Length: 271
Length: 357
Ligand SMILES: Nc1ncnc2c1ncn2[C@@H]1O[C@H](COP(=O)(O)OP(=O)(O)O)[C@@H](O)[C@H]1O
Ligand SMILES: [Mg+2]
Image (cartoon, rainbow over all chains, first blue to last red; front, side):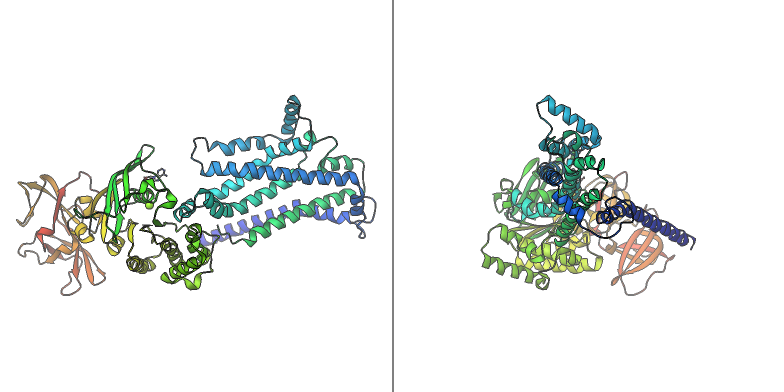
């Protein structure tokens, strides 16, 4: 009896804690986003809360601002390049680490994690200096490579975690049924890893799009990405245009998460 | 097992495999005749799975040969061996339906569409899963998953079927049903099979022959009755069915039991005389030819039999006695004597200083 009562109090504390954390998460992540979104539709030419009226004029102003549109396109490119590079480098790295038989396979996630452990600002400066030492000027490409090095760990870890939970007997079963290595990979391993690859890819895309600490040192002077451009704008601009830019970013992130959720959700993948 | 002069269909000879310093298999030799179901029986960690994996081609042995139908199986690539495997975890592809799981091998091997359809239907029919063709593995019960795994292997008509503890994930009742079902299935398609278990009842129930493994070696192989009635070692006697141990001394090729009964012995010195529970018979104290005296500790029904535990004077462990459930039943606490029904069915092995587990 006593024990039962204690457990139930423990349960209540646990549930309370989870609820509190959930509310906190909501407060920190979602509420500011909603405020920014609300402000972006304000009819007044200054930022204030609560907003008044409803207009799309700040979004129109954004679309008319060639410099900002250019920055958004730059950031989209950066996100895309970072994502593709991370998939091309990260999936094989995870496979080598999870399924390889070589001696240092355990070192792969550690090596991949190293740039991630360095503060972004330090990594940005380091890449800038190292780049100039070998004649690489700051550019959209240099920025994308640097962010790739930084964020690769996330994709490798996501894919590796999934790989380690996959029954190795699945690949053996495929081989036993007649599939060669490539065929077994295509038919069995890859489809089962796909949710993890997509989730990791979404993360890396967002980082490529959104990163500022590394991008600020490595971006091309004529090709600033959106966060860098935004940083410049907030210092002078006080209209809800800034909120509209954030609104676009929020929209893109939400869209991406929705795509991933839908893709993974549609596949009958059971863990 | 192959008798002398009968060619083995599966012939494993002198196979050894070490993982680091640990020898998982040590000079393992096994011969299986065509159409036979052979069970590898042994405690966990004795190398059963490793032997299956070597036969299937998932790992290469350090030494030794594996021949299948007279051909060198080790020379065949893993995906070309005519061997079906039912994995312990079933290893069903979670993202494929039952039909796609079972049809996978046919697709990979490029079997013509029409034939694929026919063989898939036959295989599903064989394991009574036609109605479940469009389900995903996660939507099936353990017994159904097991049958999918079986169908997936059998649809390719392999020459040999390997089953690694296929019932270990099932509950006791389903297990008993699946055992006879799987034996019937294997016999109906007439395939040669090597089956792995650590459960001696399962081994007895399903196999034409049993190979008892211990520490990476095959300790004894033969038909179930032979392994049970003529165990080659104390380990086998203990592992395959229960046995009572009586510590004694052997002199001049004999062991003399308390009532002056004598059992032939091939060894001398400290020995253990082992008597199966059904080879003992309770009788009144002082009865003629009773070797041991003791007190009944408890009596419990076991199917059509009664199992009696007797604390025998001079024995380190209580004796278990199995008698038909008819006639007078000794009550707990009662003094009884025990008589051996068939002296020739006692086994004598050297006594180990520590009781073998
Ligand atoms: N891949 C492996 N690496 C290292 N040790 C292994 C490996 N596979 C099996 N072993 C060891 O070999 C021994 C036999 O294993 P196994 O064949 O799985 O036994 P069983 O199937 O009889 O339980 C065990 O001690 C096990 O720890
Ligand atoms: Mg095993």
